[in-house]
Image (cartoon, rainbow, N blue to C red):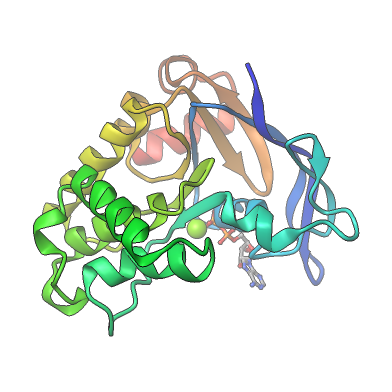
Length: 243
Ligand code: ADP
Ligand code: MG
Protein backbone atom coordinates (compact mmCIF):
# COMPACT_ATOMS: atom_id res chain seq x y z
CA UNK A 1 0.00 0.00 0.00
CA UNK A 2 1.12 3.52 -0.72
CA UNK A 3 0.13 6.26 1.68
CA UNK A 4 -0.88 9.45 -0.08
CA UNK A 5 -1.21 11.32 3.19
CA UNK A 6 0.16 10.26 6.53
CA UNK A 7 -0.97 11.99 9.68
CA UNK A 8 1.26 11.66 12.71
CA UNK A 9 0.44 12.78 16.26
CA UNK A 10 -1.93 15.46 15.03
CA UNK A 11 -3.35 17.74 17.70
CA UNK A 12 -5.74 20.64 17.44
CA UNK A 13 -6.82 22.90 20.28
CA UNK A 14 -9.36 25.68 20.19
CA UNK A 15 -8.25 27.64 23.23
CA UNK A 16 -8.45 25.23 26.17
CA UNK A 17 -10.55 22.78 24.20
CA UNK A 18 -8.48 19.83 22.90
CA UNK A 19 -10.51 18.85 19.87
CA UNK A 20 -8.03 16.44 18.28
CA UNK A 21 -5.72 14.44 20.55
CA UNK A 22 -2.86 12.55 18.98
CA UNK A 23 -4.48 11.43 15.72
CA UNK A 24 -2.49 8.91 13.68
CA UNK A 25 -3.88 7.76 10.37
CA UNK A 26 -2.78 7.33 6.81
CA UNK A 27 -4.79 7.60 3.63
CA UNK A 28 -3.81 4.95 1.10
CA UNK A 29 -3.93 5.46 -2.65
CA UNK A 30 -7.28 4.38 -4.09
CA UNK A 31 -8.98 3.67 -0.79
CA UNK A 32 -12.30 4.86 0.54
CA UNK A 33 -11.84 5.83 4.16
CA UNK A 34 -14.96 6.72 6.09
CA UNK A 35 -15.07 8.63 9.37
CA UNK A 36 -18.04 8.12 11.66
CA UNK A 37 -18.75 9.36 15.18
CA UNK A 38 -21.02 11.55 17.26
CA UNK A 39 -21.50 15.21 16.61
CA UNK A 40 -18.67 17.17 18.21
CA UNK A 41 -16.17 14.28 18.13
CA UNK A 42 -13.79 16.20 15.83
CA UNK A 43 -14.55 14.72 12.39
CA UNK A 44 -14.86 18.04 10.55
CA UNK A 45 -11.87 19.46 12.36
CA UNK A 46 -9.80 16.49 11.21
CA UNK A 47 -10.81 17.04 7.57
CA UNK A 48 -10.22 20.77 7.91
CA UNK A 49 -6.76 20.11 9.36
CA UNK A 50 -5.94 17.72 6.50
CA UNK A 51 -6.59 20.43 3.93
CA UNK A 52 -5.31 23.15 6.25
CA UNK A 53 -8.51 25.14 6.49
CA UNK A 54 -7.52 24.84 10.17
CA UNK A 55 -3.95 25.04 11.35
CA UNK A 56 -3.03 22.00 13.45
CA UNK A 57 -1.63 22.81 16.89
CA UNK A 58 1.07 20.17 16.50
CA UNK A 59 1.93 16.99 14.64
CA UNK A 60 2.76 16.14 11.06
CA UNK A 61 0.90 15.83 7.79
CA UNK A 62 3.16 14.01 5.38
CA UNK A 63 2.37 14.33 1.69
CA UNK A 64 4.70 12.84 -0.94
CA UNK A 65 7.29 12.24 1.75
CA UNK A 66 7.31 15.79 3.10
CA UNK A 67 5.73 17.31 6.18
CA UNK A 68 3.48 20.04 4.83
CA UNK A 69 3.52 21.80 8.22
CA UNK A 70 7.23 22.52 8.00
CA UNK A 71 8.31 26.12 7.50
CA UNK A 72 8.47 27.26 3.89
CA UNK A 73 6.36 24.42 2.48
CA UNK A 74 4.28 25.40 -0.56
CA UNK A 75 0.81 25.24 1.01
CA UNK A 76 -1.21 26.69 -1.88
CA UNK A 77 0.27 23.99 -4.12
CA UNK A 78 -0.55 21.28 -1.54
CA UNK A 79 -4.15 22.48 -1.31
CA UNK A 80 -4.66 22.08 -5.05
CA UNK A 81 -4.04 18.34 -4.63
CA UNK A 82 -7.02 18.01 -2.29
CA UNK A 83 -10.67 18.39 -3.23
CA UNK A 84 -13.28 19.21 -0.62
CA UNK A 85 -17.04 18.82 -0.76
CA UNK A 86 -19.01 20.52 2.00
CA UNK A 87 -22.44 20.00 3.49
CA UNK A 88 -23.58 23.31 2.06
CA UNK A 89 -22.39 22.97 -1.60
CA UNK A 90 -20.62 26.38 -1.70
CA UNK A 91 -21.25 26.90 -5.41
CA UNK A 92 -20.80 30.34 -6.97
CA UNK A 93 -24.42 31.45 -7.36
CA UNK A 94 -23.67 34.08 -10.00
CA UNK A 95 -22.06 31.53 -12.34
CA UNK A 96 -23.75 28.79 -14.33
CA UNK A 97 -22.91 25.13 -13.79
CA UNK A 98 -20.21 25.04 -16.46
CA UNK A 99 -18.47 28.21 -15.19
CA UNK A 100 -18.56 26.80 -11.67
CA UNK A 101 -16.62 23.79 -12.90
CA UNK A 102 -14.22 25.85 -15.05
CA UNK A 103 -13.22 28.81 -12.89
CA UNK A 104 -10.80 27.08 -10.51
CA UNK A 105 -9.15 25.27 -13.37
CA UNK A 106 -8.50 28.58 -15.14
CA UNK A 107 -7.52 30.75 -12.16
CA UNK A 108 -5.63 28.21 -10.05
CA UNK A 109 -4.38 25.57 -12.49
CA UNK A 110 -3.91 28.07 -15.38
CA UNK A 111 -5.65 25.82 -17.88
CA UNK A 112 -6.95 27.31 -21.13
CA UNK A 113 -10.71 27.92 -21.33
CA UNK A 114 -10.95 25.24 -23.96
CA UNK A 115 -9.23 22.60 -21.87
CA UNK A 116 -11.11 23.62 -18.73
CA UNK A 117 -14.40 23.29 -20.59
CA UNK A 118 -13.56 19.81 -21.83
CA UNK A 119 -12.58 18.62 -18.36
CA UNK A 120 -15.63 20.25 -16.77
CA UNK A 121 -17.88 18.44 -19.25
CA UNK A 122 -16.24 15.09 -18.55
CA UNK A 123 -16.78 15.48 -14.83
CA UNK A 124 -20.35 16.77 -15.16
CA UNK A 125 -20.98 13.68 -17.27
CA UNK A 126 -19.63 11.48 -14.44
CA UNK A 127 -22.10 12.96 -11.93
CA UNK A 128 -25.01 12.95 -14.38
CA UNK A 129 -25.22 16.76 -14.65
CA UNK A 130 -23.96 17.47 -18.18
CA UNK A 131 -27.48 18.40 -19.35
CA UNK A 132 -27.47 21.31 -16.89
CA UNK A 133 -24.36 23.20 -18.01
CA UNK A 134 -26.23 26.47 -18.52
CA UNK A 135 -28.30 26.33 -15.34
CA UNK A 136 -27.63 28.63 -12.42
CA UNK A 137 -27.35 26.99 -8.97
CA UNK A 138 -30.66 28.60 -7.89
CA UNK A 139 -32.45 26.55 -10.57
CA UNK A 140 -31.13 23.24 -9.23
CA UNK A 141 -32.29 20.94 -6.45
CA UNK A 142 -30.02 20.32 -3.48
CA UNK A 143 -28.97 16.94 -4.83
CA UNK A 144 -28.13 18.44 -8.22
CA UNK A 145 -26.15 21.26 -6.59
CA UNK A 146 -24.15 18.77 -4.59
CA UNK A 147 -23.40 16.73 -7.71
CA UNK A 148 -22.16 19.89 -9.43
CA UNK A 149 -20.00 20.65 -6.40
CA UNK A 150 -18.50 17.17 -6.72
CA UNK A 151 -17.87 17.70 -10.46
CA UNK A 152 -16.25 21.07 -9.75
CA UNK A 153 -13.94 19.48 -7.22
CA UNK A 154 -13.08 16.57 -9.53
CA UNK A 155 -12.25 19.01 -12.31
CA UNK A 156 -9.20 20.09 -10.33
CA UNK A 157 -7.87 16.50 -10.58
CA UNK A 158 -7.23 16.14 -6.86
CA UNK A 159 -5.22 13.22 -5.48
CA UNK A 160 -7.69 12.93 -2.62
CA UNK A 161 -11.31 13.99 -2.29
CA UNK A 162 -12.55 14.95 1.16
CA UNK A 163 -16.30 14.92 1.82
CA UNK A 164 -17.76 16.46 4.98
CA UNK A 165 -21.29 15.11 5.43
CA UNK A 166 -22.18 15.75 1.80
CA UNK A 167 -25.79 14.60 2.24
CA UNK A 168 -26.63 16.12 5.63
CA UNK A 169 -28.16 19.30 4.24
CA UNK A 170 -30.29 17.49 1.65
CA UNK A 171 -33.97 16.66 1.67
CA UNK A 172 -34.30 12.91 2.25
CA UNK A 173 -35.40 12.19 -1.32
CA UNK A 174 -32.14 13.63 -2.68
CA UNK A 175 -29.73 11.74 -0.49
CA UNK A 176 -29.76 8.63 -2.69
CA UNK A 177 -28.62 10.32 -5.90
CA UNK A 178 -25.61 11.87 -4.17
CA UNK A 179 -24.65 8.62 -2.44
CA UNK A 180 -24.98 6.80 -5.77
CA UNK A 181 -22.67 9.35 -7.41
CA UNK A 182 -20.12 8.84 -4.64
CA UNK A 183 -20.37 5.07 -4.94
CA UNK A 184 -19.69 5.31 -8.66
CA UNK A 185 -16.65 7.48 -7.97
CA UNK A 186 -15.37 5.05 -5.37
CA UNK A 187 -15.40 2.36 -8.04
CA UNK A 188 -13.17 4.44 -10.33
CA UNK A 189 -10.31 4.12 -7.85
CA UNK A 190 -10.52 7.70 -6.61
CA UNK A 191 -9.04 8.17 -3.13
CA UNK A 192 -11.82 9.40 -0.87
CA UNK A 193 -12.11 10.41 2.78
CA UNK A 194 -15.75 10.70 3.77
CA UNK A 195 -17.36 11.94 6.96
CA UNK A 196 -20.90 10.60 6.98
CA UNK A 197 -23.89 9.71 9.11
CA UNK A 198 -25.14 7.32 6.43
CA UNK A 199 -24.16 4.05 8.08
CA UNK A 200 -25.45 1.71 5.37
CA UNK A 201 -23.50 3.70 2.78
CA UNK A 202 -20.36 3.62 4.95
CA UNK A 203 -20.72 -0.11 5.28
CA UNK A 204 -21.19 -0.65 1.54
CA UNK A 205 -18.56 1.67 0.13
CA UNK A 206 -15.66 1.82 2.61
CA UNK A 207 -12.41 -0.04 2.52
CA UNK A 208 -11.73 1.19 6.03
CA UNK A 209 -13.84 2.87 8.70
CA UNK A 210 -12.67 5.09 11.54
CA UNK A 211 -14.82 5.72 14.58
CA UNK A 212 -13.98 8.98 16.33
CA UNK A 213 -14.95 9.77 19.88
CA UNK A 214 -14.01 12.92 21.82
CA UNK A 215 -11.03 13.81 19.64
CA UNK A 216 -9.46 10.37 19.33
CA UNK A 217 -9.72 7.48 16.92
CA UNK A 218 -11.47 5.05 19.21
CA UNK A 219 -11.61 2.19 16.72
CA UNK A 220 -10.54 1.51 13.16
CA UNK A 221 -11.04 -1.42 10.81
CA UNK A 222 -12.92 -2.87 7.88
CA UNK A 223 -16.67 -2.23 7.66
CA UNK A 224 -17.12 -5.80 8.89
CA UNK A 225 -14.88 -5.12 11.93
CA UNK A 226 -16.67 -1.91 12.87
CA UNK A 227 -20.28 -2.67 12.06
CA UNK A 228 -20.48 -6.40 12.72
CA UNK A 229 -17.81 -7.05 15.33
CA UNK A 230 -17.04 -3.76 17.09
CA UNK A 231 -14.54 -4.25 19.91
CA UNK A 232 -14.84 -1.04 21.91
CA UNK A 233 -17.77 -0.33 24.18
CA UNK A 234 -18.02 3.24 22.89
CA UNK A 235 -18.26 1.99 19.29
CA UNK A 236 -21.03 -0.38 20.32
CA UNK A 237 -22.85 2.39 22.17
CA UNK A 238 -22.59 4.74 19.19
CA UNK A 239 -23.83 2.11 16.75
CA UNK A 240 -26.76 1.18 18.97
CA UNK A 241 -27.80 4.84 18.87
CA UNK A 242 -27.55 5.29 15.12
CA UNK A 243 -28.39 1.93 13.58
P1 ADP B 1 -17.86 16.97 14.29
O1 ADP B 1 -17.57 17.34 12.88
O2 ADP B 1 -17.42 15.59 14.65
O3 ADP B 1 -19.30 17.20 14.67
P2 ADP B 1 -16.21 19.25 14.91
O4 ADP B 1 -14.88 18.92 14.37
O5 ADP B 1 -17.07 20.18 14.12
O6 ADP B 1 -17.01 17.91 15.25
O7 ADP B 1 -16.08 19.90 16.35
C1 ADP B 1 -15.32 19.30 17.37
C2 ADP B 1 -15.24 20.25 18.54
O8 ADP B 1 -14.48 21.39 18.16
C3 ADP B 1 -16.57 20.78 19.02
O9 ADP B 1 -16.51 20.85 20.42
C4 ADP B 1 -16.64 22.16 18.44
O10 ADP B 1 -17.41 23.03 19.23
C5 ADP B 1 -15.18 22.58 18.41
N1 ADP B 1 -14.89 23.53 17.32
C6 ADP B 1 -14.96 23.25 15.99
N2 ADP B 1 -14.60 24.31 15.26
C7 ADP B 1 -14.30 25.30 16.13
C8 ADP B 1 -13.86 26.65 16.00
N3 ADP B 1 -13.63 27.20 14.80
N4 ADP B 1 -13.64 27.36 17.14
C9 ADP B 1 -13.85 26.81 18.36
N5 ADP B 1 -14.26 25.54 18.55
C10 ADP B 1 -14.50 24.80 17.46
MG1 MG C 1 -18.85 17.97 11.36
